[in-house]
Structure formats: structure tokens, C-alpha cells
Image 1 (cartoon, rainbow, N blue to C red):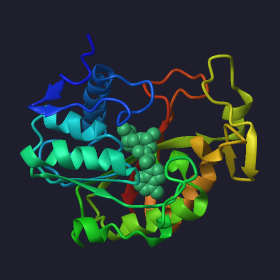
Image 2 (image 1 turned 90 degrees about the horizontal axis):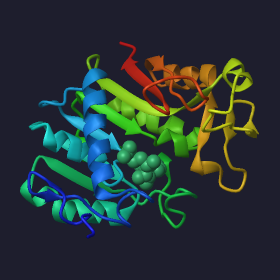
Image 3 (image 1 turned 90 degrees about the vertical axis):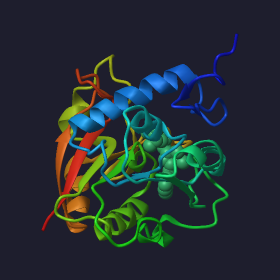
Length: 253
Ligand SMILES: C[S@@+](CC[C@H](N)C(=O)[O-])C[C@H]1O[C@@H](n2cnc3c(N)ncnc32)[C@H](O)[C@@H]1O
């Protein structure tokens, strides 16, 4: 029996493919949503009642995790894939008015090649207003963006942060030492050079997975007004509870 359609969280159904990521089932999505909510809690995100902006929200993985934990703040999810946002607007928001989802038609060679806008056109204040948010989350989004887009997003993020805002980002960061120590357990090798600070996994589809030189990434965050702490992931074969590198960014006051 296909159980994809009958799984739900507090009455909100889990989507099935093709809204879910490739190869994901609804029960795997739910398990992943749960563990992400737990991890975000551990990283200091207010998952009880904080105001949260989730950029690149995908099929709503974090939103489902928050819903299950009884979150009562205002959540805003933004993504460039309209089928996912359409699903979430149709099935999630009607019963849960504190969750809003917005489509932005930003071009991305991997996810939305026919998009009509650039990342540099986007202002998040248009979705969440001018007040500082409690948390901003970008999980595996800068993993798919070139430096000019990433930089533009960081500057826009700064506008919706205050001294207490917690910004959580996952992406791939390399150092010479990490690349030199890749072993057979490495899930990514980033052998393709884009420029001296940026590499990718696949030359035929660079935006499928991009990695930034760690010091360069730190500089980009600092130039946009953020200091960062990094918890390294397991992509290079090291032991870690998560695949990508987790960044906690705080506004330099
Ligand atoms: C690997 S998925 C991660 C989705 C979600 N953050 C999660 O962890 O479940 C990457 C997401 O980033 C979105 N994305 C890519 N470029 C974006 C951009 N410029 N602005 C917003 N979202 C973007 C994609 O559409 C996709 O849903």
C-alpha cells in the first residue's frame, strides 16, 4: 500500500512526489522534519514562538517539524519552486494561519532555469517587514548559489536581523586540509574548480553542489555584517552528526 498520502501532522497532509525531494517518501520526510526541528532547537532557534524566516523552504520540511512541536510563532517560508509553494499554500496555510509561504521566481540553473528574477532583485522585507526576526534559516540553499547571489542574500538578511537574531545556514566549506584528507567515506570531493575560492562536485551541473573556501565564506559574512561559528559536517568523511557544515551567524552590532 502506498502510505505517502495518508501521513499527516496535526491534520496537515505530507506531500508526496514530485513535491518531495527526489527519492524521498512521506515517512522519511516526516522523520527528517522531526530531527531537523530538534537540531534547530539545539542550535538556539526559538521553535516555540519565535518569528522565523525559512529561505529555500522546499516542501516545508522545517514547517512540518515546527508544527509537530506545537510552534505558535509566525513562520514565513520562501522558495523558487512554485509547485512546492502551491502545495503548501493549498494544504498547510488554510488550517495553520501562522505559516505563510511565498514563491519568488528567481532563476537557478539547477532548480528553476526559467526563472524571471535574479537573487539580487529580492528584498525579504517585502515578506516579513522591517522588524528584526528571531531566526532566519537557510538549509542547503547557499549550496546552490554562486557568490554574487549569496552576497546579495546576506546583505538582504542583514536588513531583517537585530543583535538577538540567530541565522542558521548549512553549506559546504572547504579548507586545503579538509580537501587533502578526503578518504573513502567522503560523500563529496569538490574536485571541480570554479575559481580560487569556490569549487563544485559536478562540472556539468555546478549548482547541484557548490563549496566555498572557508576563510572566503567568513569574509563574505563579515562584509555583510555577520560573525560566524562553524560546526563542521561529515561530507569529507569525518564523523559528525550532519552532512553539511552548519553555520551560526550573528549580526556584528
Ligand atoms: C536542497 S533544497 C533544501 C530545502 C529546505 N531548505 C530543506 O532543507 O528541506 C534547496 C532549496 O533551495 C531552493 N533555492 C535555490 N535557490 C534559491 C534562491 N535563490 N532563493 C530561495 N530558495 C532557493 C530550492 O528551490 C530548493 O527548494
